[in-house]
Length: 160
Image (cartoon, rainbow, N blue to C red; front, side, top):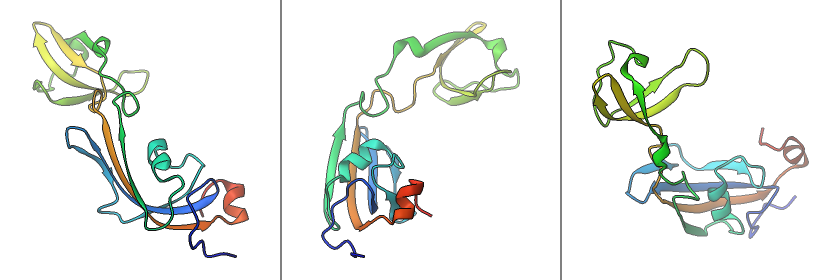
């Protein structure tokens, strides 16, 4: 079996990468700086699609920078996701601080996260947009290694 020398990142190759992803405002979203390089089966939706797209076709040692619009990243900020709700829907002991993020857990359904925009009488103004909405995404990625996937890795669609 080939050791992958000169092999390009493509579907059904095992790729090891280092990367950093930051919002256009400079906030770090994710990186391998603290955990070390990540290894995955390319073309099998195991990592963020834009990150996989950034390294597609690269060989070991090559790197690429990619800028994504807000729409391609976390989406545009949507004004309709800023909603009024009764203060009574939040736990009475909860100290409210404008600008802070909170999670509420309705009796039925998934937890919902929001940023408190304001308190007006018996109502609160809550922004349910993702904190990164409206921000572009800057991605830097470097391929550390590429090797052919084994038949077993391809069959399972994952490593190990």
